[in-house]
Length: 359
Image 1 (tube, helix red, strand yellow):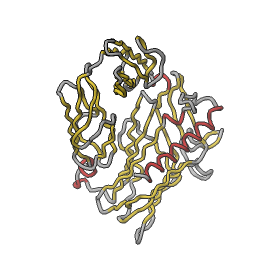
Image 2 (image 1 turned 90 degrees about the vertical axis):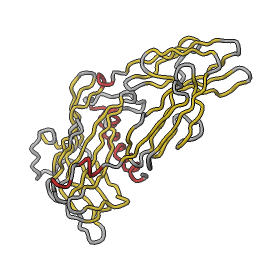
Image 3 (image 1 turned 120 degrees about the vertical axis):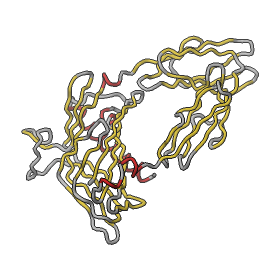
Image 4 (image 1 turned 135 degrees about the vertical axis):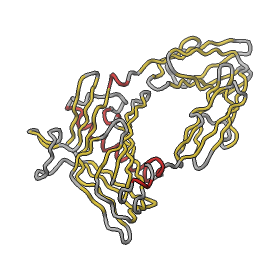
């Protein structure tokens, strides 16, 4: 069988609605072979430390992270401290810094006491990245306001003004400066809320290599469980073998295909993709008649053996489908945005293909 885990999550700060599609490819279904989690777990352990103990914190925290992931590690100083440098599996003073999870990793963030008089206040939910960039003898410091999920940086107050971000401030030897960073709630859910995503898949294909025959199934509706639960694509067994290409074609159904869902065919025509939800608390149903496809080379090839599971992971940013060039959400019900949304959908699939090929 093939299962898809469509793991939807929302990053409110950026207005993203991302669906992660994990295709679990299995030849045969033997319940004695262990759980899904046991068969696909491939993680490494990250251990973090700070010096001194009260100097700050490291994000993300200790835990298990997927093998091969480029994890963004950030040192966040406590009040009265500034970040100085990394040690162990990270070095230098770039913050945040990228860490490849290709094995168990350990990083230590070193903080030093701030020796200039700067008081920072936070209104809302966010924090400040602070970097000393010059001392001559006055100290010039770069401040970057970083919003927490669901919030955005609005403005500076006190001895800084405006909304330039990052911004610099110069502090004299005998001066004391006071800066307030103001964050506002983005209330993402009140702007756009995705309730249902459905695709009409005209063909799902795995290309066999060497002596393995191609595997194909066609003409079905994929209703994506937005809670991340598994979605069974087909109960057919996939023949054991080696597959080096994956293709998912999303098209409106041919006239001779029995659809059985009025979202995809009614008196107005036939459709390939349906998204339902609310925009500013008003219900919408967006339907596309365009064709889309996801086509990627599998390198290394996916090897499927009896009762052995393999994975293909697809990340699609659904929220980006409904944004204009300025990053603002558009009304999916307004037909003047239809072409923009179709172009965004096509672009999101192309970006996934590029990212997948570059892994």
